[in-house]
Amino acid sequence: MANSKCYVGKCWHGLSVMCLSALAGIMAPLIFILVMTVVGLLQPDYSAIQETISQLVLGRYGWFQAMSFFIVGFLLVVFAFRLYNVTLRTIYAKVGFVFFVISSLGFFLMGAFPVKPDEVVFTISALLHSIAVGIVVTSFILGGFAYSIYFRADLRWSRFWLYTLLTAIACLAFLMLWLITPQEWLWKGLSERLLVVTSFVWIGVVSVKLLKFCLNKL
Image (cartoon, rainbow, N blue to C red; front, side, top):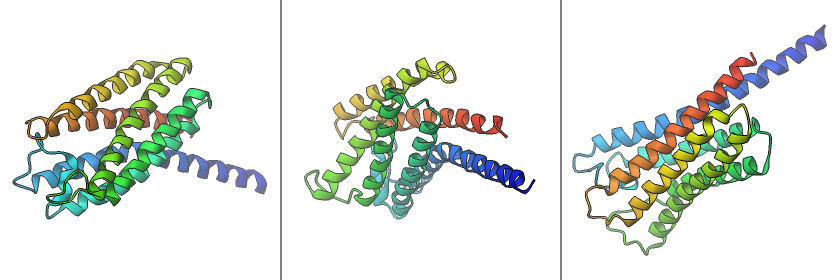
């Protein structure tokens, strides 16, 4: 009887950890978008339409934005592992998982090398920050394409494959728009925010599905 209780306790603890890890993908978008919005509003001269999110670190409250890179990066790593944990470990699931982890780790690099006032693109810090942005976005898009193929073959996720594919395509389109838009154009920041919101909404939706998986086992 004691062994039975111990076993039940271990199962309950395992499910609790699974549920908490599923919340990571819900918390990450909320934290990042909330910090981005509030810090932007606290900087009267900042234009969310024209200026990039990275430039938020330059203001008085910019350290909040810098810290959010580390917090969100950690939560997205947890999300990547949680999603992979419920897959059938096919080649596409593995590829998607690797790219998502790489994308998540890119947030740490962005936080460690923030942009600085009057910094030209060829400085080490600016260069590393630009590389980190590229890693985050490109890896997420590639991971999204890989998971869309996996979701189509997994009956539990088949309803998500088209949404995942469209999300990856939309993020690719916003990335191309962001890359070809000169800094002085009025929608430079807007295209970046559309990319961020599109990707984070997908992460949140998938995390809700992961949370349902956990709650169904309770």
